[in-house]
Image (cartoon, rainbow, N blue to C red; front, side):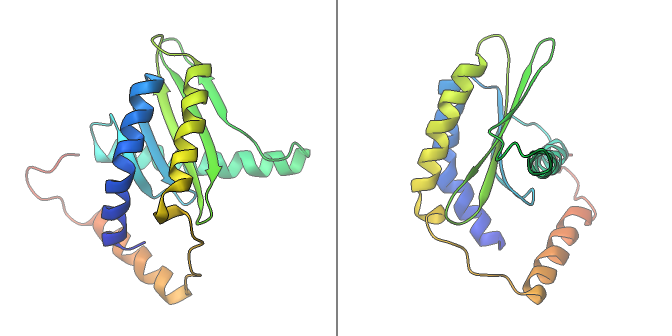
Amino acid sequence: MRRGDMARLNEVLREPMRVFVRESRAHIALLVNASGQVLAQHGFVGRYQVMNVAALAAAANASARVLADLTGAGRWQYLHHAGRSRQLFLAPFSTPSEELILVAIFDEHSTLGLVELFFQRFADEVRRLPEFSEALPPVSAAAFEGELEAGLDRIFAPQQSGEET
């Protein structure tokens, strides 16, 4: 995806993400694609925290998919981790254009059932968005390499003064 595409996606996902966070009572939410590109987020304070969670969510999704295939369990629905004060919910969903992954972090003011319910509503709403309703065209190796290099340049470029870390 190009930078302009990301800005547009961020804009169209803003309201569905806001509604999910409000109704599920999640404190933090992140939507990424299967490669870990951040499409929308709520509640993170630092961009490196967002990038780390995005990469780990994509890796967890890929690992869970392989484990499900190896064990014959079929497609997995979600991962849930209950910590002492916070809980983590990580769930994939498919759209005609690509697979997406939602990460939600919530506390005692919510429940797994509530997060799961509003996750389903969020996924249904995202699937209806025109930006996710059509299959993406195949990407050439050269285009992929160019996007990868541009992304790495953005990540590893020297920080400008005053930027958040």
